[in-house]
Length: 72
Image 1 (tube, one colour):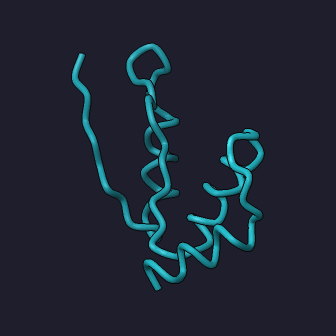
Image 2 (image 1 turned 120 degrees about the horizontal axis):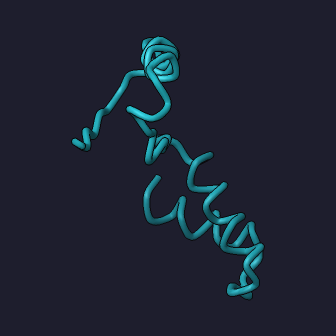
């Protein structure tokens, strides 16, 4: 078995997934389906995951301000 890693543009992603989903299930497995975003909304969702884990004592707004100060 081979493993292939692809970066797929949004405009063709549905077509690629459609193709992969129509191959025999015992011949192919999607091992990772990760979305990479360059905007702050992605970072915001990652921060929400961290806050919900109970690890951080900072408020959501404090964390967003820190990130914007560093990266925006």
